[in-house]
Image (cartoon, rainbow, N blue to C red):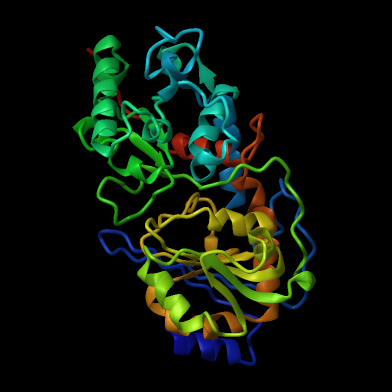
Length: 413
C-alpha cells in the first residue's frame, strides 16, 4: 500500500473498515499480502488470554483454533533429547576448562547476560520442562547445549574464529560418539544463540549450517547463515522477575518514544535527523531524559529501529510495557510470525518510510490504536520467560516452532 492511498483510506467516511497489508521481503523477493476487514463501531472488551477471540473481533492470531489444537498435540507428543554435556551429573569432567560452555548458566540474571538472556532462559526452561526425554530413540529433536554467549566471554574461546572452531569440533565429536547426528545429517539437531557473534558459529561445519536448526535472535533474511523456514526466530527478552499490568491508553501522554545509540545505524541516524526536535516525538540519541522504562509506560508507540542487527530487546520491551511497537527494520524475520499477525498489534514499516513516519502514526484512527493495544495485551504472554515453563510462554512458543519442523525422514544404517 502506498502512503497516498493510506491517507485516502484514513480520511474516507468509511474509515471504520481498516485494511492492513503486511510486506515480508525474502531473499527471493516474495511478497505476501494479507488483507483483513475489521469493524471499529465500539471498543471491545478484553479477551481472556487463553480463549479464542470471538469471530467478530480482531485477533492477533492468523488462526487461533488451528494453532491451539496443534499446540495441544505438541505438549503431549514432542520429545527433545539433550546431549549430556548440559547436565552437571553427567558431564565427563566438571573440571574441564570449557564445562561452563555447556552447563546451565548459574546466574542468568547477571547484567552481562541481559541482551542474551533468551539464550540461557531457553536452556533452563527446556531442562525443567516435560518435553525432555532421556531416550534418544523416541526423540523428535536433539539439543546441542553450547552457549555462544558464554564462549564470547570465555578466555579460551572468545574470538569469533575460535568460537566457530569450537562449535565445529563439538559437532564432529557428537557425530563420532553417537549415531544420532549421522541418522539425519544433523537435520533434527538444533542450537540456540542470541549473541550477534552466533551468526558465524556454524560457519565452519557444512552440515551444521545447511541442515541443523538455528534458534536465534538475529533472524535476518539478509543474513547469509540464516535460512528462513529452517531456522527459528527467537525473541530477545530481558530478564524480568515481575510481570506488571501495562498502563492503559488514557494514561499514555506521549505519542512516540525511542532512545538508543545511532552510531551503528543509518536508519536511526535518519530518524534522529528528521524527528529528534519534533515536539510530538520523544526521541533520544543515547540515554533518555526520563527513565528508560517510563518512556515505554508513558507512550502510545515505541520505535524499534534496526541497529547493528535487525533485532533489539526494544521490541519485547514495548510489548511488555504495552507500547505499540513501530518496527523499522528491513529483512527482520519476526518471531512467531506464522502464528501471530504482527499487523494486528504493531505497525510494520520499511526503512524508506522514515520521512513519512509522523504522517503514518498521526493518521492512525483512535479506534485502530485501541485495537492494536488490546491485541498487544493478548500476545504479551508469548513474550516472557518463566522460572518454570508455563503454557504459551516464550519457551513453549519456540518449542512449537520446532514441532512444525518435525517429521524428518532418517537415514538408517
